Length: 130
Image (cartoon, rainbow, N blue to C red; front, side):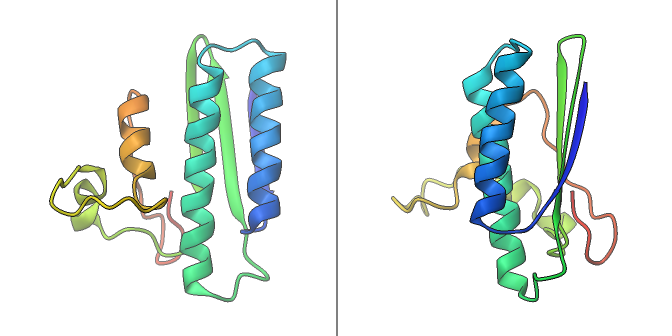
């Protein structure tokens, strides 16, 4: 089963994806529903926040792809916020106890890293990042 969505980078897009992925996981009775819903939610928040930081989002969208086959799920989020420079990818996935804050933001990728089998980043172009 494969789903591809194109969404506006805003709260409504996040809410729609939250509801859609929950329904998808429930209808197909897939394992780890709660964890997958959390992972997709955090990925969408990161994409929306990144795109909001770049501005000019009226004509831009976030693409979400969910693919499930034989017990393997692949989730891809593509935004046009420019991405994370290659040399900083590992920095986003490390826990630095010297800079831990009690902020609600900034920990999503760290949580995701510890919940999935593999996480990767790819700069597709100067704008597109997945």
